[in-house]
Image (spheres, rainbow, N blue to C red):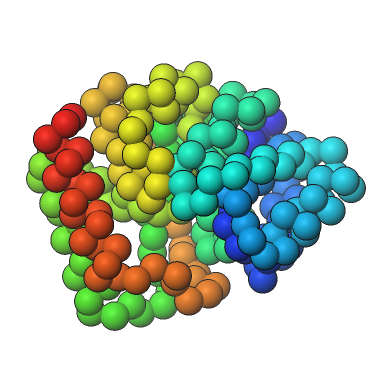
Length: 221
């Protein structure tokens, strides 16, 4: 069996379509970990829970802690293999299957995005700069830290989760750094990324926040 975790926050427009696609997969457990949605997200996912025995719902009351939501989903998962995927399912089912296949031989499998949509120069520049900076500071060779598709061997990742300090969007980066330093077997796989909605992220403000988190993490690590 494979456990799939979706962190949600105000995803009422797209969550039903994504859940329906995932539930087409066989022998899976779907865990939806909600971070205090204020729209109809919870109402919609609870309907799936009532009709599908393999759907679990977690109601986290604190907003803006994506990493915390993902961790809670991993911790209650029933399988020894677990995948987290963004609510809009931009990686597609094919991305989930790619990561799932590699989990047989690796402890952490990271998707790296091959986007079908041309991004702005500023966003591409900041993304590449972020990756280069992290790789330089921590002696890494990762292609994509923030991709919303990652797979875990549960017994290996649980000790790493206990060490992670940041529970928001920097969580992915800290997870990968700590996993490599703990000598976990890591694999990156390319996934076709079709963005299904406009990003909620404010690029410049978010980039500044990430820069401050990198500096703080480097000093305290």
